[in-house]
Amino acid sequence: MAQTYGPFFSPEWVDFKSVKAIDRESAVALEKMVSTERPLNLTLQEVMKDRKVRPLAARCLAALGEYEAILRELGDANQYSFWHSEFDTLRHSIASSPEAATKIHQTINLLRPADAIHIYRLLWGFTDEQLNAGAAAQLVKFLEHDQLDIRVLAHENLIAITGPLGYYRPERSVSQNKPAIQNWKDRQSKGGIVYKTAPTPLDDYKPIAAGPAAGVK
Image (cartoon, rainbow, N blue to C red; front, top):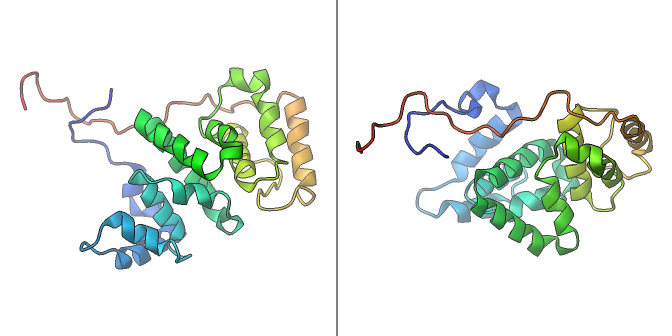
């Protein structure tokens, strides 16, 4: 059950030094574009035209419960530097509440109806049992999919499970990725697509002090 009282341990991104340099620069630029006189979501939608702040703006919109921008990022080959963060953002959003998961599912269905079932499933994550039952082979097969966002999500899942392997780049063509894909196929055929460490539930904020006593507001 979610804790609604605090204080809470701060998330890692509160420490400025733990944030990637490219995100720090984007945050400084985005802050200058935001005004308290206008709705935040409208400002973020407008600044999506600015490539310097676009990835951060998309993640901010996701934090506000608007997922169209961040889902479109997964299909943009120019945004490859940010796919990992966007994948994590979407996974955490799905885990945050049933309402968020439903909203993401609905948005995927609107944007990518033909492949919606695959895209949504790739955001859940997989257990070892599911990998052994065929999910590992399906993930490797998706590396050759004709749609970029599916290749991105399949690859993000694979490196989350095993760590990086070879030089697969989702934004490149299948022919350019042929050696890297073969490496993944070889690993899958040998049963090597398993977790290095068992997956754990996504982090939640943790109270650092006991909650209020019963009956105390």
